[in-house]
Length: 219
Image (spheres, rainbow, N blue to C red):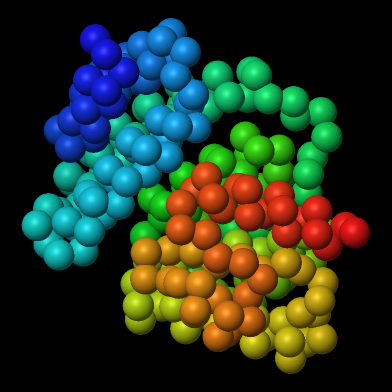
């Protein structure tokens, strides 16, 4: 099979909820020497975004969403093992506290960003979904984080990203942490409006953004 046909086959395993087959195709892509980051960025991430949109519109329901997520996780487990085996991890770039903001229960996109940050050399503390704004700040202080990453997948929960930054400012801790945001409804304009340090559209971009912002702060 060509790489293109393997990409299509992998996409189909998510759409048809086939975790075992997803892992097999991911392994075939590794053996074909395809960059695993490319597979995540060009196949897994956009396919799950489409499936997530279908769930939001009630075109599919929770069992289907979970089946697709299971297939995605099977594929990413194969891909990330390969990334980790070929990536220098001796020095941790920094510590990141990540989570989906209060009121939002979506975490597929956040989970992909977490994976990308980890394989890029960050130590990641995942708070999960529907995270109270103050919990991000408390965890960041507890672990000595360099960065807070806030995911919002609904327009109605974007305000919680703003709330975290407002709390940091009120507590006199805004300069202690780099704050990055992401999620389908978010934009660079929203990032500037709420005073976040960065915004990324994809998981791969998020990992690069985190690296660049940390380097900039260290100067």
